[in-house]
Length: 233
Image (cartoon, rainbow, N blue to C red; front, side, top):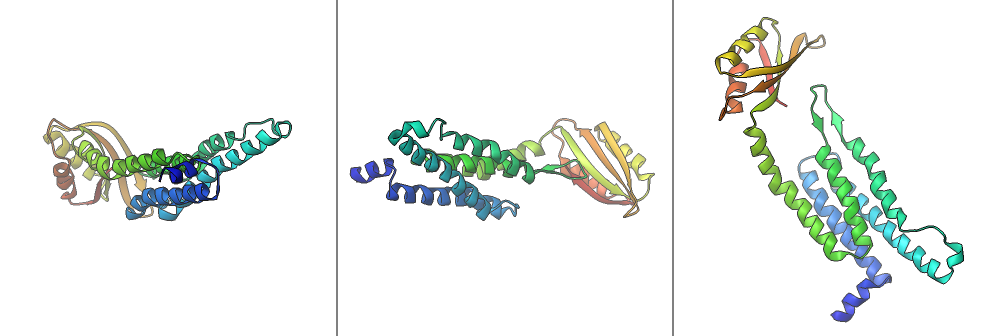
């Protein structure tokens, strides 16, 4: 067993196969969680990112071995390939982030996951097996466990953005009356007219009293006559 682990630390066919296999496994595990939530960058995307990133330190290691044989032909540091992968992942991550017309920012977690998957791939390609496996566990733990904690924190937050779609412009005064009766302060408001659906859209930034359930005020606004949609942003 000790000989086998010693074999993995060397740059040979066995270690290369193990590094690629670990990259596929780690990238697949991270991508499965995103795939389960129906994100655009899912199972296959994370595997490809992780495998491609794993390739760069192995190329660098190979070039280093060549430089040791003939130093005069290699003046640059081939390990900078991995640094370029980390920087280049910013372009893919930016493509995963979108801002909706309701000022919602989506895709940040997916972009961060892709960036982390790239680094996990670099670790696997460099032969840092335990580091890659442990980082994958932490990513999965963050996505599955800490996400529930995040939902709890958002649900109990005192400041919330609300999107309201209604057809009668006078309904806005009724909405403000409902908020005022519940002691909710309107910090900011953005009103626009939707000519396509002949409706009015409002994005309200609300400040709630302590221990006030968000669902309660959303339900009361939804019960108003001309309100068609209410959504927490």
